[in-house]
Image (cartoon, rainbow, N blue to C red):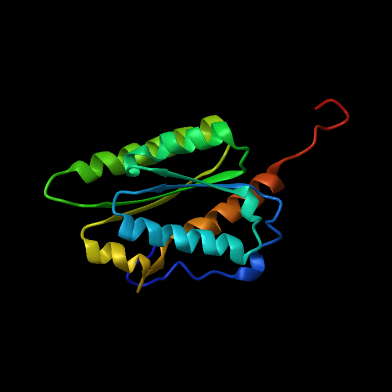
Length: 171
């Protein structure tokens, strides 16, 4: 979500409560690995910075961004996680393949989030060229992996805060 005017990799660390109780999934695409692996590093390091338990961070690698939703589903089938962070990079080329992949990933993660009740974090860098991807994976616009980790933390906390106990008078 970085723009030319705002670097969203900066956030108020004081808003984060204890996250050691949460379990995180990270699914990272290998395609454009020079970008996606930097996204992963930013994401993983941010979770550890806020005291996530290393044993509660589960990582799957998938061939490309198109496979992020199915990779997330496979990860959730194997591990009990509170939230899944999906990291990938699609760079526009000479064809419109990027539109198809970006839309498929967005719709797949949205459906998976709704059906599973587990937030799916869209950490997909979608750029017009390689330089823009570099700028968003640790360059001048921050690291989308950091942003994805922060979003995951907030969604795990929101999910916990939104969980309520059944009313004892029958409603």
